[in-house]
Amino acid sequence: MGNLTVSLAESMTGGKVSSRLVEIADASTYFQGGVVCYSDLSKVEVLGVKKNTLEIYGAVSAEVALEMARGAKKLFHSDIALSVTGYAGPKGEDVGLIYVGIIFKQHEDCKKLAIRGKSRLQIIENTTKMMIEHIEFLRKAP
Image (tube, rainbow, N blue to C red; front, side, top):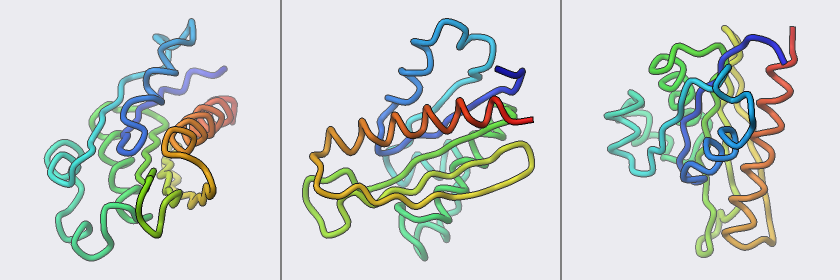
């Protein structure tokens, strides 16, 4: 893998992505750090998500996911920053709706996922695996 550094801002995965990354032997060469911001207040105070963004779009939105990723990139000075926010359930009509914010150097994107028919733990696990795959892919990019 390249020399690109990575940081994370996690909400619904509760630190699982960070935990999985540090299980990889060479993680110390690229993983700058991660934060778990589960509450709206922590998203604002730690990551700099705008209160207005939360009020208009809600915590589970593309807009908040991107602001979370921007906050992680700024906090950890990384080349790549990913964030995740979503509804893991088990209750609610939007269970399985997930947004992953991605910043790769100066490019920004947000992926909307819909993981349906799974338990809370399965949704979190599937999201964690997908994020690890994204990180591995981005680190190999030119």
